[in-house]
Amino acid sequence: MAWAYLFAAGLTEIAWAIGLKYSEGFTRLWPSVFTISGIGVSLLLLSLALRGIPIGTAYAVWAGIGTVGTALAGIILYSESTDLLRLACIGLIAAGIVGLKLVTP
Image (cartoon, helix red, strand yellow):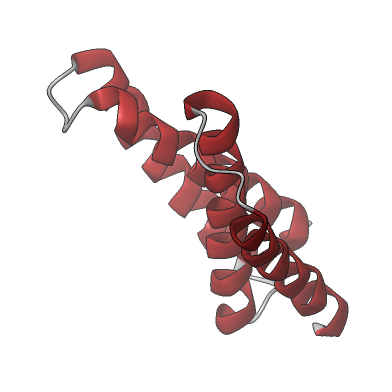
């Protein structure tokens, strides 16, 4: 169950990161409320995941899911660069997430 919490925490991290863009520096009410709520939910889920996953692994996977997901969302939502080197680096982060999952007992 800890890995499910961690995956959900990573997904909510993507949501609040995108929410930051829409909140325009916390000057727009509802996007700001959504973003702050997302931060709280993400951290709550991360804390639940830490009951069964070592802190170093959990934090790296949480941040990695958020990083990869937010980068991909930027490509899809905001037409950010799809330069081959950028995509390769995103792929390396994703490979690291998978690797940590495979080597964590």
